[in-house]
Image 1 (cartoon, rainbow, N blue to C red):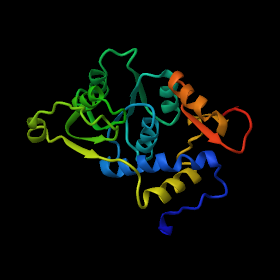
Image 2 (cartoon, rainbow, N blue to C red; image 1 turned 45 degrees about the vertical axis):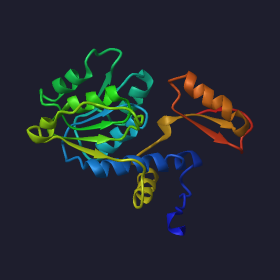
Image 3 (cartoon, rainbow, N blue to C red; image 1 turned 135 degrees about the vertical axis):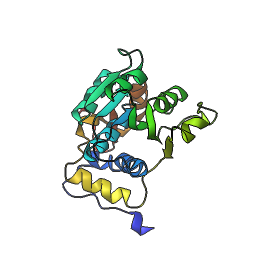
Length: 225
């Protein structure tokens, strides 16, 4: 319906506009999780996890911890306002590290933004008693993780799930980007012409340092952003 059509503000580029949808997904997750002021947040994954970290910063959470395996993306998370970044290639046990950073308790909130059983298990294990895990990463249909019922009963741990942005999440995303609360430009990697689409897909798989590649029918050569 027409009510779902949103106007791209004049001050926003098409590249910035391309991030309205992913930011809306992170807004939806933030609402589901409902993190409180000054609470600790751990984000596993530094794809959309970078935007989740920025959302936690905007909600005045602290510390905001981002866990990943790509140095360049982790540095972008730091640029977005993350207080601590954990490179799993350099830290043997990210669960123990998060507990160390939170006084031994574990994080108040954890966002799993990878979608693998191992990282979901880590997310659950680094969550403090009474904490909330937001399940954001899309796992396989046959994937499983182990949860003790006592973690719900005696530990009072909670799980929320979130997927795509919907309803007011989209105009709220536009507002945040338009007013500079979220700047997606550090996530821009390059722009390519339409005929290079297949090349771009292969390049994204080949080079883990690439973040987002824009495909445009209006340009004739590749541009690094």
